[in-house]
Length: 355
Image (cartoon, rainbow, N blue to C red; front, side, top):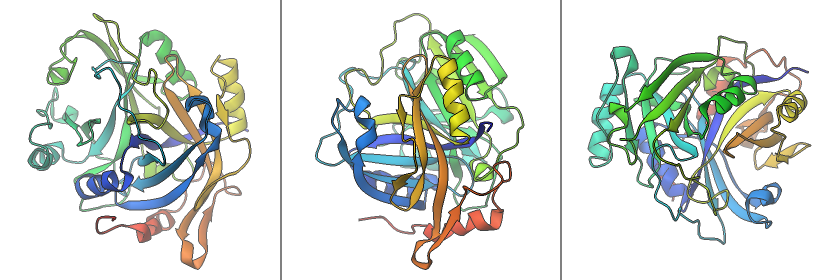
């Protein structure tokens, strides 16, 4: 069985109040499709939670314009911890998530009104490279990138998750990992220097090497058309020693906790990761249950320990009350689900704040 990477399913964010974060991203960035809401114990993640299973509450929110979603993750019974060391651009781990927008200038204008103190200047070498950074109300860095991919039209000016900016210590070593295991074989750009678009960010005035990676055009199945094309930007700070973002903290503490890929062929991926020297550190082995969704998940660490999650989805609810679910186990893994069926997930749209 070959591996197929359908796209970025979600970025995990550790928060103190999941509903509050969902409400903000729903209102301002269009993540208004609530795929699941679940309370359970993270029994398989004890490797990253000091050996003790942690109770948690989690929401998965999607944006139907297209792109990955947000897994908004909150401890139950434990106060999530912020890093004791202030974050600076280039630190090791997920520095920012990338959000697509079909009109970055309009998105910048609207979000500047919402976040006047933490929405930075818009930048780009030309009209095809427009982007800007903002810091959400919980200190998570977000890059909004001009991108015309659209799965389904929406009133939102922004779409879903396009990718991530990941701080690394050795960009050549990390490029091998992301190219070979995750298929990011196209080097869009490879630049070194001090960058104007980084200048307003904490630590952004240092010298960096930054490499933008994308996939070649490829077959995808399942929800691949909803997730759309993706990109990974690796950055290495060259004139200071970076800190590890999650040093001395638990998975689930405040900030970006993982980058998750929707895949098919977990067994093939397991063997490939092992041969590359990045064996699964967590493996659900059999079907797991996440409230209304089910599947098989695993984790690997990139060369700097950044957590990459893989999910092979087996079942997703469309109309739970009617018993309507999408079963992916018996489908052709290279055939995307019909757009009409995926768009039916709009039944889960949340139109007002969760309380």
